[in-house]
Length: 65
Image 1 (cartoon, rainbow, N blue to C red):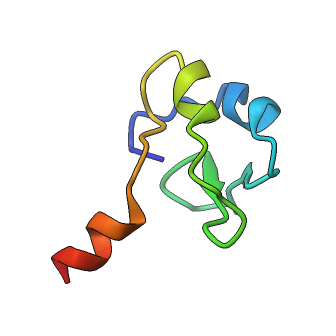
Image 2 (cartoon, rainbow, N blue to C red):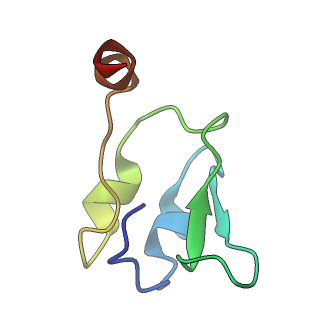
């Protein structure tokens, strides 16, 4: 989830793993991704009207560290 998130909930309704939830009060984004539940299917990225959901390759992130 990026800073562009408007909190419309399209991704929340689409996620087959229920990995997207409303963020706690005071959190910088309206929604959060529960990384332990996310399978990387990118369904959220396909329905996001503001391109706030981005597909991230966990393998690529691990290789960068």
